[in-house]
Length: 380
Image 1: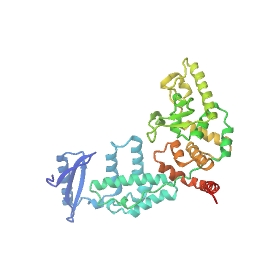
Image 2: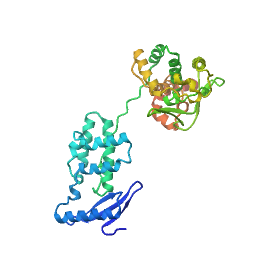
Image 3: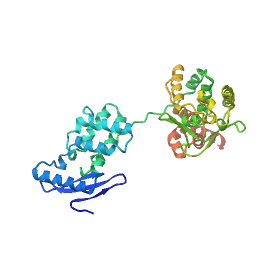
């Protein structure tokens, strides 16, 4: 309830008081004070009123961007991670930065969408689209806070679309490139890992999440039930992206590589005075094999770095692990004529429509095959 020119201000994250007054021109202004008592809010209002009488008060419309930036950063200090907070400080206070140079000394109320477009365009013109997108998010958060605290009447960022990054075109390896890639492999673990990647099209986290028990030599298949990621120097298992386990059939050659690989894991385990267990990672860190169930898989990024080296040795374009997945889908549809639904199940897509949107155009070539077959079957 409003009493004495103040009323309570509360959100899901903060509490405080909003104070009201009329400036020297008779226009109403307001200010929000967070984490303050009612007495502190009243004292702040009295101070403002005295300043107005003395002609020393700066109207809300005169508040500069850099001035509110310091208030904004104080509010964010306790809500952001250390690294993110440092990024905010650099973004909003660095004198040589694009933000301060363009709008640092401009009155907050007078900053227009065009001013902000000019700031973002500096990064875009330098082909720094990622920085432009980060800048958009930081500025939008900043002006939303100013709006909540009554320092501005509207958020100028609302009139600006977020810069879009151009996704690189997906590449698929040719059969010839795959042959060159596999031919330079001499390490048995690399042969097994990359053969499995080409055959199954698993995501890199799914490959690292495989355990010995996931291989079924009776049904000649492999079961995908978990993923593994390595972030902030910590590796963790997680559920699959679509939360649905799946089985993928394997060919004889891939199974033979896996059998040899498991024999190698047994020999390695024996060096640590133990046997290979069903719960062991399929591609473990070799120095942790003696830990048994606590043994961690190799970091997925380790395999990504190995792939860069192998592509260079094979004298082919650089490809990523995800592009091996894309290669598998392309080969199935274009070279083998496998239907989209089967490809979708193999890739573990929760939405079959996603697979169709991503790879449906590749199946257009199968229309010619279908027409030819129908022409041969139907009577003239």
